[in-house]
Length: 536
Image (tube, rainbow, N blue to C red):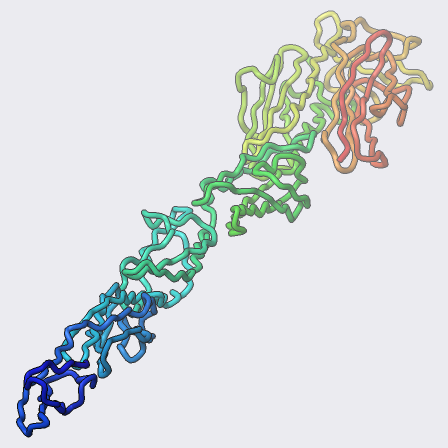
Protein backbone atom coordinates (compact mmCIF):
# COMPACT_ATOMS: atom_id res chain seq x y z
CA UNK A 1 0.00 0.00 0.00
CA UNK A 2 1.23 3.59 -0.46
CA UNK A 3 1.09 6.61 1.93
CA UNK A 4 1.42 10.41 1.95
CA UNK A 5 3.56 12.46 4.42
CA UNK A 6 1.73 15.22 6.06
CA UNK A 7 3.45 18.31 7.38
CA UNK A 8 4.42 16.91 10.66
CA UNK A 9 7.55 18.89 10.66
CA UNK A 10 6.26 22.14 9.27
CA UNK A 11 7.99 23.33 6.22
CA UNK A 12 11.05 21.30 6.67
CA UNK A 13 11.83 18.75 4.06
CA UNK A 14 11.00 15.23 5.26
CA UNK A 15 12.44 12.04 3.98
CA UNK A 16 10.51 8.86 4.59
CA UNK A 17 11.79 5.34 4.59
CA UNK A 18 10.29 3.51 2.96
CA UNK A 19 9.59 6.24 0.53
CA UNK A 20 6.21 7.64 0.04
CA UNK A 21 4.17 5.67 -2.46
CA UNK A 22 5.73 2.34 -1.60
CA UNK A 23 3.60 -0.85 -1.23
CA UNK A 24 3.43 -2.43 2.16
CA UNK A 25 3.29 -6.18 2.53
CA UNK A 26 0.88 -7.95 4.75
CA UNK A 27 1.97 -7.35 8.31
CA UNK A 28 3.40 -4.38 10.28
CA UNK A 29 5.91 -2.00 8.68
CA UNK A 30 7.71 0.91 10.54
CA UNK A 31 8.00 4.10 8.53
CA UNK A 32 11.08 6.25 9.50
CA UNK A 33 10.75 9.98 8.82
CA UNK A 34 13.80 12.30 8.71
CA UNK A 35 13.48 16.03 8.38
CA UNK A 36 16.04 18.26 6.74
CA UNK A 37 16.63 19.71 10.10
CA UNK A 38 17.78 16.41 11.26
CA UNK A 39 14.80 15.71 13.34
CA UNK A 40 13.37 12.23 13.08
CA UNK A 41 10.11 10.52 13.74
CA UNK A 42 8.58 7.11 13.00
CA UNK A 43 5.22 5.35 12.82
CA UNK A 44 4.05 1.84 12.02
CA UNK A 45 1.84 0.64 9.19
CA UNK A 46 -0.06 -2.61 9.68
CA UNK A 47 -1.59 -4.38 6.61
CA UNK A 48 -4.23 -7.08 7.34
CA UNK A 49 -5.44 -9.74 4.70
CA UNK A 50 -9.03 -10.54 5.51
CA UNK A 51 -10.08 -11.49 1.97
CA UNK A 52 -11.17 -15.16 1.72
CA UNK A 53 -9.95 -17.34 -1.07
CA UNK A 54 -12.41 -18.69 -3.66
CA UNK A 55 -12.75 -22.47 -4.31
CA UNK A 56 -14.86 -24.70 -6.56
CA UNK A 57 -15.00 -28.45 -5.69
CA UNK A 58 -14.48 -31.09 -8.38
CA UNK A 59 -17.64 -32.49 -9.98
CA UNK A 60 -19.51 -35.43 -8.49
CA UNK A 61 -17.68 -38.78 -8.82
CA UNK A 62 -19.38 -42.17 -9.23
CA UNK A 63 -17.22 -45.29 -9.12
CA UNK A 64 -17.56 -49.03 -8.51
CA UNK A 65 -16.28 -50.86 -5.53
CA UNK A 66 -12.95 -52.58 -5.65
CA UNK A 67 -13.18 -56.15 -7.02
CA UNK A 68 -14.25 -58.57 -4.38
CA UNK A 69 -14.92 -55.85 -1.83
CA UNK A 70 -17.88 -53.82 -0.72
CA UNK A 71 -15.74 -50.65 -0.62
CA UNK A 72 -13.04 -48.80 -2.47
CA UNK A 73 -9.81 -47.32 -1.21
CA UNK A 74 -9.39 -43.57 -1.47
CA UNK A 75 -6.31 -44.17 -3.58
CA UNK A 76 -8.53 -45.86 -6.18
CA UNK A 77 -10.89 -42.90 -6.43
CA UNK A 78 -9.98 -40.05 -8.71
CA UNK A 79 -11.57 -37.18 -6.85
CA UNK A 80 -10.32 -34.61 -9.32
CA UNK A 81 -8.77 -31.19 -8.57
CA UNK A 82 -10.75 -28.21 -7.30
CA UNK A 83 -10.27 -24.76 -8.76
CA UNK A 84 -9.39 -21.91 -6.41
CA UNK A 85 -8.06 -18.32 -6.26
CA UNK A 86 -6.92 -15.79 -3.62
CA UNK A 87 -5.66 -12.20 -3.44
CA UNK A 88 -2.51 -13.46 -1.85
CA UNK A 89 -0.30 -16.33 -2.63
CA UNK A 90 0.28 -19.29 -0.39
CA UNK A 91 -3.17 -20.86 -0.50
CA UNK A 92 -3.34 -24.52 0.50
CA UNK A 93 -6.05 -27.04 -0.52
CA UNK A 94 -7.19 -29.94 1.68
CA UNK A 95 -10.18 -32.38 1.81
CA UNK A 96 -11.68 -34.71 4.35
CA UNK A 97 -12.08 -37.73 2.07
CA UNK A 98 -11.99 -41.01 4.09
CA UNK A 99 -9.28 -43.57 3.49
CA UNK A 100 -12.03 -46.08 2.54
CA UNK A 101 -15.21 -45.27 0.74
CA UNK A 102 -18.13 -47.61 1.43
CA UNK A 103 -21.05 -48.21 -0.89
CA UNK A 104 -23.25 -45.18 -0.92
CA UNK A 105 -22.77 -41.42 -1.28
CA UNK A 106 -20.12 -39.59 0.74
CA UNK A 107 -19.79 -35.78 0.94
CA UNK A 108 -16.18 -34.70 0.63
CA UNK A 109 -15.44 -31.20 1.88
CA UNK A 110 -12.66 -29.30 0.16
CA UNK A 111 -11.03 -26.39 2.10
CA UNK A 112 -8.95 -23.55 0.65
CA UNK A 113 -6.78 -21.79 3.30
CA UNK A 114 -4.67 -18.64 2.52
CA UNK A 115 -1.59 -17.53 4.38
CA UNK A 116 -3.61 -15.20 6.53
CA UNK A 117 -5.79 -18.01 7.75
CA UNK A 118 -8.75 -17.10 5.65
CA UNK A 119 -10.64 -20.26 4.56
CA UNK A 120 -13.36 -21.21 2.15
CA UNK A 121 -14.99 -24.65 1.68
CA UNK A 122 -16.76 -26.46 -1.13
CA UNK A 123 -18.30 -29.93 -1.19
CA UNK A 124 -18.10 -32.78 -3.64
CA UNK A 125 -20.38 -35.85 -3.74
CA UNK A 126 -18.63 -39.19 -4.15
CA UNK A 127 -20.96 -42.12 -4.93
CA UNK A 128 -19.68 -45.67 -4.57
CA UNK A 129 -21.81 -48.27 -6.38
CA UNK A 130 -21.81 -52.10 -6.17
CA UNK A 131 -22.12 -53.60 -9.65
CA UNK A 132 -20.25 -56.77 -8.91
CA UNK A 133 -22.48 -59.79 -9.64
CA UNK A 134 -22.89 -62.44 -6.98
CA UNK A 135 -21.65 -65.93 -7.80
CA UNK A 136 -23.64 -69.16 -7.57
CA UNK A 137 -22.29 -72.69 -7.89
CA UNK A 138 -24.21 -74.60 -10.54
CA UNK A 139 -25.97 -77.51 -8.79
CA UNK A 140 -25.45 -81.03 -10.06
CA UNK A 141 -28.20 -82.44 -12.26
CA UNK A 142 -30.53 -84.86 -10.49
CA UNK A 143 -31.92 -88.07 -12.00
CA UNK A 144 -34.18 -90.27 -9.92
CA UNK A 145 -37.06 -92.74 -10.13
CA UNK A 146 -40.68 -91.92 -9.58
CA UNK A 147 -41.95 -92.99 -6.20
CA UNK A 148 -43.47 -96.45 -5.99
CA UNK A 149 -47.04 -96.41 -7.18
CA UNK A 150 -46.80 -92.79 -8.31
CA UNK A 151 -46.01 -91.03 -11.56
CA UNK A 152 -44.00 -88.36 -9.75
CA UNK A 153 -41.33 -87.75 -7.14
CA UNK A 154 -41.07 -85.20 -4.35
CA UNK A 155 -37.63 -83.59 -4.28
CA UNK A 156 -36.12 -81.31 -1.66
CA UNK A 157 -33.61 -79.22 -3.59
CA UNK A 158 -30.41 -78.19 -1.84
CA UNK A 159 -29.56 -74.48 -2.05
CA UNK A 160 -26.33 -74.09 -4.03
CA UNK A 161 -23.33 -72.25 -2.61
CA UNK A 162 -23.24 -68.49 -3.27
CA UNK A 163 -20.84 -65.59 -2.63
CA UNK A 164 -20.96 -61.83 -3.02
CA UNK A 165 -18.67 -58.92 -2.23
CA UNK A 166 -21.36 -57.15 -0.23
CA UNK A 167 -23.73 -59.89 0.85
CA UNK A 168 -26.52 -62.14 -0.44
CA UNK A 169 -30.09 -60.99 -0.18
CA UNK A 170 -32.00 -63.95 -1.66
CA UNK A 171 -31.52 -67.28 -3.42
CA UNK A 172 -34.63 -68.45 -5.29
CA UNK A 173 -35.66 -70.99 -7.91
CA UNK A 174 -38.66 -71.64 -10.12
CA UNK A 175 -39.22 -75.23 -8.97
CA UNK A 176 -42.72 -76.24 -7.84
CA UNK A 177 -43.35 -74.93 -4.36
CA UNK A 178 -44.36 -78.37 -3.10
CA UNK A 179 -41.31 -80.04 -4.63
CA UNK A 180 -43.52 -82.40 -6.66
CA UNK A 181 -42.13 -83.31 -10.06
CA UNK A 182 -44.11 -85.44 -12.50
CA UNK A 183 -42.23 -87.93 -14.67
CA UNK A 184 -40.24 -85.95 -17.23
CA UNK A 185 -37.24 -83.60 -17.55
CA UNK A 186 -37.20 -80.08 -16.13
CA UNK A 187 -34.74 -77.17 -16.22
CA UNK A 188 -34.76 -75.34 -12.92
CA UNK A 189 -33.44 -71.75 -12.86
CA UNK A 190 -31.70 -70.61 -9.69
CA UNK A 191 -31.38 -66.84 -9.07
CA UNK A 192 -29.06 -65.30 -6.49
CA UNK A 193 -29.55 -61.58 -5.72
CA UNK A 194 -27.20 -59.49 -3.60
CA UNK A 195 -28.17 -56.69 -1.24
CA UNK A 196 -27.73 -54.13 -4.00
CA UNK A 197 -30.00 -55.88 -6.52
CA UNK A 198 -27.30 -57.51 -8.62
CA UNK A 199 -28.32 -61.02 -9.65
CA UNK A 200 -26.85 -64.10 -11.31
CA UNK A 201 -28.66 -67.20 -12.58
CA UNK A 202 -27.70 -70.80 -13.14
CA UNK A 203 -29.67 -73.88 -14.13
CA UNK A 204 -30.14 -77.38 -12.83
CA UNK A 205 -31.68 -80.30 -14.75
CA UNK A 206 -34.15 -82.51 -12.90
CA UNK A 207 -35.11 -85.83 -14.52
CA UNK A 208 -37.76 -88.10 -13.03
CA UNK A 209 -37.89 -91.50 -14.71
CA UNK A 210 -40.69 -94.02 -14.63
CA UNK A 211 -38.92 -97.34 -14.08
CA UNK A 212 -41.89 -99.07 -12.50
CA UNK A 213 -43.28 -101.94 -14.55
CA UNK A 214 -47.02 -102.23 -15.10
CA UNK A 215 -48.88 -104.48 -12.68
CA UNK A 216 -50.91 -107.31 -14.16
CA UNK A 217 -54.09 -107.52 -12.12
CA UNK A 218 -55.52 -110.51 -13.96
CA UNK A 219 -53.58 -112.98 -16.06
CA UNK A 220 -56.27 -115.23 -17.53
CA UNK A 221 -56.46 -118.81 -16.35
CA UNK A 222 -58.28 -120.96 -18.89
CA UNK A 223 -59.70 -124.38 -18.04
CA UNK A 224 -59.37 -127.12 -20.62
CA UNK A 225 -61.62 -126.15 -23.51
CA UNK A 226 -63.96 -128.62 -25.10
CA UNK A 227 -63.61 -129.05 -28.82
CA UNK A 228 -65.87 -126.85 -30.92
CA UNK A 229 -66.51 -127.49 -34.59
CA UNK A 230 -66.41 -123.71 -35.13
CA UNK A 231 -62.82 -123.71 -33.87
CA UNK A 232 -63.30 -120.39 -32.04
CA UNK A 233 -63.01 -120.01 -28.27
CA UNK A 234 -63.54 -117.24 -25.73
CA UNK A 235 -60.53 -116.33 -23.59
CA UNK A 236 -60.99 -114.03 -20.58
CA UNK A 237 -59.41 -110.62 -21.09
CA UNK A 238 -56.31 -109.75 -19.15
CA UNK A 239 -56.16 -106.56 -17.08
CA UNK A 240 -53.29 -104.41 -15.84
CA UNK A 241 -52.62 -101.09 -14.13
CA UNK A 242 -49.65 -98.72 -14.09
CA UNK A 243 -48.42 -95.93 -11.86
CA UNK A 244 -48.56 -93.53 -14.82
CA UNK A 245 -51.94 -94.66 -16.08
CA UNK A 246 -51.95 -95.68 -19.72
CA UNK A 247 -50.99 -99.20 -20.79
CA UNK A 248 -51.13 -101.09 -24.07
CA UNK A 249 -51.51 -104.81 -24.60
CA UNK A 250 -50.14 -107.37 -27.01
CA UNK A 251 -49.89 -111.12 -27.14
CA UNK A 252 -48.06 -113.85 -29.00
CA UNK A 253 -49.51 -117.36 -29.23
CA UNK A 254 -47.23 -120.32 -29.83
CA UNK A 255 -47.69 -124.05 -29.73
CA UNK A 256 -50.64 -125.76 -31.36
CA UNK A 257 -51.81 -122.30 -32.43
CA UNK A 258 -49.65 -119.52 -33.84
CA UNK A 259 -50.92 -115.95 -34.09
CA UNK A 260 -50.43 -112.51 -32.56
CA UNK A 261 -52.59 -109.58 -31.51
CA UNK A 262 -52.54 -106.10 -30.00
CA UNK A 263 -55.30 -106.20 -27.44
CA UNK A 264 -56.12 -107.62 -24.03
CA UNK A 265 -58.44 -110.22 -25.54
CA UNK A 266 -57.00 -113.22 -27.39
CA UNK A 267 -60.35 -114.89 -28.09
CA UNK A 268 -60.57 -116.52 -31.48
CA UNK A 269 -59.29 -119.56 -33.30
CA UNK A 270 -57.34 -122.19 -31.40
CA UNK A 271 -56.24 -125.55 -32.69
CA UNK A 272 -56.54 -128.81 -30.82
CA UNK A 273 -53.67 -129.19 -28.40
CA UNK A 274 -51.74 -126.92 -26.06
CA UNK A 275 -51.14 -123.29 -26.97
CA UNK A 276 -49.32 -120.74 -24.84
CA UNK A 277 -50.37 -117.08 -24.83
CA UNK A 278 -47.54 -114.76 -23.81
CA UNK A 279 -49.09 -111.48 -22.77
CA UNK A 280 -47.10 -108.23 -22.73
CA UNK A 281 -48.26 -105.05 -21.04
CA UNK A 282 -46.37 -101.87 -21.96
CA UNK A 283 -46.76 -98.54 -20.18
CA UNK A 284 -46.32 -95.09 -21.66
CA UNK A 285 -42.60 -95.14 -20.77
CA UNK A 286 -41.89 -98.54 -22.37
CA UNK A 287 -41.74 -100.51 -19.14
CA UNK A 288 -43.14 -103.98 -19.70
CA UNK A 289 -44.53 -106.89 -17.73
CA UNK A 290 -45.39 -110.31 -19.12
CA UNK A 291 -47.35 -113.35 -18.07
CA UNK A 292 -48.48 -116.54 -19.75
CA UNK A 293 -51.76 -118.33 -20.17
CA UNK A 294 -51.98 -121.96 -21.21
CA UNK A 295 -54.87 -122.81 -23.50
CA UNK A 296 -55.61 -126.49 -23.98
CA UNK A 297 -58.22 -127.42 -26.57
CA UNK A 298 -59.43 -130.95 -25.99
CA UNK A 299 -59.68 -133.23 -28.97
CA UNK A 300 -63.30 -134.08 -29.83
CA UNK A 301 -64.85 -136.71 -27.64
CA UNK A 302 -66.13 -139.54 -29.83
CA UNK A 303 -68.48 -142.32 -28.91
CA UNK A 304 -69.92 -145.30 -30.71
CA UNK A 305 -72.17 -148.20 -29.82
CA UNK A 306 -70.94 -151.18 -31.82
CA UNK A 307 -73.50 -153.57 -33.22
CA UNK A 308 -74.28 -156.51 -31.02
CA UNK A 309 -75.89 -159.84 -31.96
CA UNK A 310 -78.22 -161.74 -29.72
CA UNK A 311 -78.10 -164.61 -32.24
CA UNK A 312 -75.13 -165.19 -34.52
CA UNK A 313 -75.14 -166.60 -37.12
CA UNK A 314 -78.61 -166.18 -38.45
CA UNK A 315 -79.63 -163.14 -36.47
CA UNK A 316 -79.72 -159.45 -37.36
CA UNK A 317 -77.57 -156.95 -35.46
CA UNK A 318 -79.14 -155.27 -32.48
CA UNK A 319 -82.17 -157.55 -32.54
CA UNK A 320 -83.68 -159.63 -29.77
CA UNK A 321 -85.90 -162.43 -30.95
CA UNK A 322 -88.99 -163.41 -29.08
CA UNK A 323 -89.15 -167.16 -29.24
CA UNK A 324 -85.48 -167.88 -29.75
CA UNK A 325 -82.16 -166.88 -28.19
CA UNK A 326 -81.42 -164.67 -25.20
CA UNK A 327 -83.96 -162.13 -24.09
CA UNK A 328 -81.31 -159.51 -23.37
CA UNK A 329 -78.18 -158.09 -24.95
CA UNK A 330 -75.38 -155.87 -23.68
CA UNK A 331 -74.63 -152.58 -25.40
CA UNK A 332 -70.95 -151.70 -25.00
CA UNK A 333 -70.10 -148.05 -25.51
CA UNK A 334 -66.76 -147.18 -27.11
CA UNK A 335 -65.33 -143.77 -26.23
CA UNK A 336 -62.22 -142.07 -27.61
CA UNK A 337 -60.73 -138.60 -28.01
CA UNK A 338 -60.94 -135.93 -25.36
CA UNK A 339 -59.18 -136.89 -22.16
CA UNK A 340 -59.89 -140.14 -20.35
CA UNK A 341 -61.65 -141.19 -18.13
CA UNK A 342 -65.10 -141.10 -19.45
CA UNK A 343 -68.52 -140.75 -17.87
CA UNK A 344 -71.54 -142.45 -19.42
CA UNK A 345 -75.24 -141.81 -19.33
CA UNK A 346 -77.78 -144.11 -21.02
CA UNK A 347 -81.31 -142.85 -21.61
CA UNK A 348 -84.34 -143.65 -23.72
CA UNK A 349 -86.85 -141.31 -25.27
CA UNK A 350 -84.29 -138.48 -25.56
CA UNK A 351 -80.76 -137.69 -24.49
CA UNK A 352 -82.19 -135.46 -21.75
CA UNK A 353 -84.08 -138.26 -20.06
CA UNK A 354 -83.21 -139.75 -16.68
CA UNK A 355 -80.08 -141.86 -16.53
CA UNK A 356 -80.78 -145.58 -16.79
CA UNK A 357 -77.16 -146.61 -16.55
CA UNK A 358 -73.83 -144.84 -15.94
CA UNK A 359 -71.27 -147.40 -17.08
CA UNK A 360 -69.91 -148.18 -20.51
CA UNK A 361 -71.83 -151.49 -20.63
CA UNK A 362 -75.59 -151.61 -20.46
CA UNK A 363 -77.50 -154.88 -20.39
CA UNK A 364 -81.02 -154.43 -21.70
CA UNK A 365 -84.15 -156.51 -22.09
CA UNK A 366 -86.57 -154.26 -23.98
CA UNK A 367 -90.23 -155.19 -24.21
CA UNK A 368 -90.47 -153.46 -27.58
CA UNK A 369 -88.21 -151.93 -30.18
CA UNK A 370 -86.40 -149.19 -28.30
CA UNK A 371 -83.86 -146.50 -29.22
CA UNK A 372 -81.14 -145.99 -26.61
CA UNK A 373 -79.27 -142.68 -26.27
CA UNK A 374 -75.68 -142.54 -25.10
CA UNK A 375 -74.19 -139.41 -23.59
CA UNK A 376 -70.40 -139.51 -23.03
CA UNK A 377 -68.31 -136.91 -21.25
CA UNK A 378 -64.60 -136.96 -20.62
CA UNK A 379 -62.78 -136.01 -17.42
CA UNK A 380 -63.10 -132.29 -18.30
CA UNK A 381 -66.83 -132.52 -18.92
CA UNK A 382 -66.48 -132.34 -22.70
CA UNK A 383 -69.33 -134.14 -24.41
CA UNK A 384 -69.44 -136.37 -27.45
CA UNK A 385 -72.28 -136.04 -29.91
CA UNK A 386 -75.19 -138.08 -28.68
CA UNK A 387 -75.02 -141.62 -30.05
CA UNK A 388 -78.09 -143.75 -30.50
CA UNK A 389 -78.67 -147.41 -30.99
CA UNK A 390 -82.05 -148.92 -31.81
CA UNK A 391 -82.59 -152.39 -30.46
CA UNK A 392 -85.30 -154.24 -32.32
CA UNK A 393 -87.67 -156.81 -30.87
CA UNK A 394 -88.68 -159.43 -33.46
CA UNK A 395 -91.22 -162.15 -32.66
CA UNK A 396 -90.16 -165.31 -34.49
CA UNK A 397 -92.60 -167.63 -32.77
CA UNK A 398 -94.87 -169.68 -34.98
CA UNK A 399 -97.07 -172.74 -34.98
CA UNK A 400 -100.49 -173.27 -33.47
CA UNK A 401 -99.05 -173.19 -30.00
CA UNK A 402 -96.44 -170.55 -30.81
CA UNK A 403 -93.81 -173.07 -29.71
CA UNK A 404 -91.89 -173.16 -32.97
CA UNK A 405 -89.49 -170.74 -34.62
CA UNK A 406 -89.74 -168.97 -37.96
CA UNK A 407 -86.63 -169.21 -40.13
CA UNK A 408 -85.82 -168.32 -43.69
CA UNK A 409 -83.97 -171.07 -45.51
CA UNK A 410 -82.74 -171.36 -49.06
CA UNK A 411 -84.51 -174.34 -50.62
CA UNK A 412 -83.71 -175.18 -54.21
CA UNK A 413 -82.20 -171.77 -54.62
CA UNK A 414 -85.25 -169.93 -53.33
CA UNK A 415 -85.73 -168.25 -49.93
CA UNK A 416 -88.44 -170.15 -48.11
CA UNK A 417 -90.00 -169.33 -44.77
CA UNK A 418 -90.24 -172.34 -42.50
CA UNK A 419 -91.70 -172.91 -39.06
CA UNK A 420 -89.44 -175.36 -37.26
CA UNK A 421 -88.91 -176.77 -33.83
CA UNK A 422 -86.58 -174.83 -31.58
CA UNK A 423 -84.27 -177.84 -31.34
CA UNK A 424 -83.65 -177.63 -35.10
CA UNK A 425 -82.99 -173.91 -35.26
CA UNK A 426 -79.30 -174.00 -34.40
CA UNK A 427 -78.42 -176.43 -37.17
CA UNK A 428 -80.60 -174.48 -39.61
CA UNK A 429 -78.87 -171.26 -38.77
CA UNK A 430 -75.50 -172.94 -39.07
CA UNK A 431 -76.53 -174.08 -42.53
CA UNK A 432 -77.29 -170.51 -43.64
CA UNK A 433 -80.84 -169.96 -42.53
CA UNK A 434 -81.84 -166.70 -40.86
CA UNK A 435 -84.35 -166.02 -38.17
CA UNK A 436 -87.67 -164.58 -39.23
CA UNK A 437 -89.60 -164.60 -42.45
CA UNK A 438 -87.92 -164.24 -45.82
CA UNK A 439 -87.87 -160.72 -47.21
CA UNK A 440 -88.17 -161.81 -50.83
CA UNK A 441 -91.71 -161.15 -52.03
CA UNK A 442 -91.65 -164.36 -54.01
CA UNK A 443 -90.75 -166.48 -51.01
CA UNK A 444 -93.14 -169.17 -49.93
CA UNK A 445 -94.46 -168.97 -46.44
CA UNK A 446 -94.95 -172.44 -45.15
CA UNK A 447 -96.19 -171.54 -41.70
CA UNK A 448 -98.04 -168.52 -40.44
CA UNK A 449 -95.96 -166.02 -38.54
CA UNK A 450 -96.27 -162.49 -37.20
CA UNK A 451 -95.85 -159.68 -39.79
CA UNK A 452 -92.39 -158.08 -39.94
CA UNK A 453 -91.79 -155.20 -37.64
CA UNK A 454 -91.36 -151.68 -39.17
CA UNK A 455 -89.96 -148.72 -37.26
CA UNK A 456 -88.81 -145.10 -37.80
CA UNK A 457 -85.91 -144.73 -40.24
CA UNK A 458 -82.75 -143.59 -38.45
CA UNK A 459 -79.27 -142.63 -39.73
CA UNK A 460 -76.23 -142.07 -37.54
CA UNK A 461 -72.52 -141.60 -38.15
CA UNK A 462 -69.63 -142.47 -35.89
CA UNK A 463 -67.23 -141.06 -35.02
CA UNK A 464 -68.44 -137.57 -35.79
CA UNK A 465 -66.35 -135.43 -36.14
CA UNK A 466 -63.81 -137.84 -37.58
CA UNK A 467 -60.23 -137.57 -38.72
CA UNK A 468 -60.38 -140.79 -40.76
CA UNK A 469 -63.71 -142.33 -41.81
CA UNK A 470 -67.33 -142.47 -40.75
CA UNK A 471 -69.30 -145.59 -39.94
CA UNK A 472 -72.82 -144.87 -41.15
CA UNK A 473 -75.58 -146.85 -39.47
CA UNK A 474 -79.01 -147.16 -41.09
CA UNK A 475 -81.67 -148.44 -38.74
CA UNK A 476 -85.42 -148.94 -38.70
CA UNK A 477 -87.61 -148.11 -41.60
CA UNK A 478 -89.15 -150.78 -43.84
CA UNK A 479 -86.85 -153.77 -43.72
CA UNK A 480 -88.19 -154.97 -47.08
CA UNK A 481 -87.33 -151.77 -48.96
CA UNK A 482 -83.88 -150.72 -50.16
CA UNK A 483 -82.22 -147.48 -49.04
CA UNK A 484 -80.27 -144.87 -51.04
CA UNK A 485 -77.43 -142.93 -49.29
CA UNK A 486 -76.21 -139.61 -50.76
CA UNK A 487 -73.42 -137.41 -49.31
CA UNK A 488 -73.13 -133.75 -50.41
CA UNK A 489 -70.76 -130.96 -49.43
CA UNK A 490 -71.82 -127.54 -48.15
CA UNK A 491 -72.19 -126.32 -51.75
CA UNK A 492 -74.64 -129.10 -52.53
CA UNK A 493 -72.25 -131.07 -54.70
CA UNK A 494 -72.62 -134.84 -54.51
CA UNK A 495 -69.42 -136.40 -53.24
CA UNK A 496 -70.67 -139.93 -52.55
CA UNK A 497 -73.70 -142.09 -53.43
CA UNK A 498 -74.64 -145.62 -52.41
CA UNK A 499 -77.72 -147.50 -53.66
CA UNK A 500 -79.46 -150.78 -52.83
CA UNK A 501 -78.53 -150.52 -49.17
CA UNK A 502 -80.32 -152.61 -46.60
CA UNK A 503 -81.76 -151.05 -43.48
CA UNK A 504 -80.29 -152.20 -40.17
CA UNK A 505 -76.85 -152.22 -41.78
CA UNK A 506 -73.63 -150.22 -41.59
CA UNK A 507 -71.27 -148.84 -44.19
CA UNK A 508 -67.89 -147.09 -43.98
CA UNK A 509 -67.11 -144.02 -46.06
CA UNK A 510 -65.27 -140.69 -45.94
CA UNK A 511 -61.65 -141.80 -45.72
CA UNK A 512 -60.90 -139.81 -48.88
CA UNK A 513 -63.02 -136.76 -47.96
CA UNK A 514 -61.31 -133.43 -47.54
CA UNK A 515 -61.73 -131.66 -44.18
CA UNK A 516 -65.05 -129.90 -44.08
CA UNK A 517 -68.75 -130.30 -43.39
CA UNK A 518 -70.97 -132.75 -45.28
CA UNK A 519 -74.62 -133.75 -45.27
CA UNK A 520 -75.45 -137.48 -45.38
CA UNK A 521 -79.03 -138.28 -46.46
CA UNK A 522 -80.81 -141.64 -46.60
CA UNK A 523 -83.94 -142.07 -48.69
CA UNK A 524 -86.39 -144.93 -48.35
CA UNK A 525 -89.48 -144.37 -50.43
CA UNK A 526 -90.86 -141.00 -49.41
CA UNK A 527 -88.90 -140.92 -46.15
CA UNK A 528 -85.75 -138.84 -45.95
CA UNK A 529 -83.34 -138.52 -42.98
CA UNK A 530 -80.20 -136.35 -42.78
CA UNK A 531 -77.22 -135.93 -40.49
CA UNK A 532 -74.24 -133.55 -40.61
CA UNK A 533 -70.76 -135.06 -40.84
CA UNK A 534 -67.61 -133.12 -39.92
CA UNK A 535 -64.30 -134.29 -41.36
CA UNK A 536 -61.24 -132.97 -39.48
